[in-house]
Image (cartoon, rainbow, N blue to C red; front, side, top):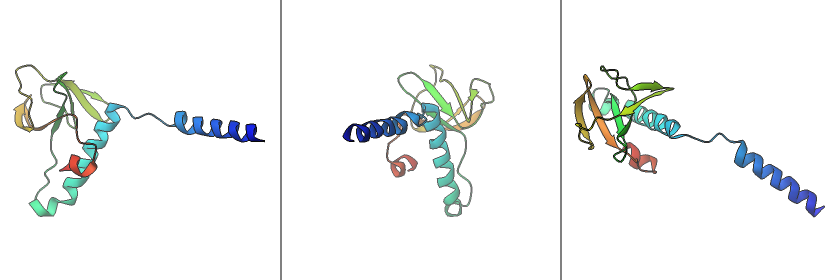
Length: 121
């Protein structure tokens, strides 16, 4: 009887562990963009306008970037819900605003905080 319970427990645990979809970095990035969009919509009355705009999330080590919007220069490629590409070497990486590839962006350096409130702030 103990062996049967142990076997059922192992099978159940493996189904929970391996049966779930693993989140990719792109899934996380898409979630981050959604969190920011929801937060700006909630606080739209505070500022009197919608602050959600074109965002670049940039990995400083690889210069890999992710965006919530396409660029005018077609540097970014759409990958499901997000756009991605490589930030050119002549663009400085910082938590700042910038004009790049034909439009204004807010750039945020990765990695983002794991705590949701810290991430949104």
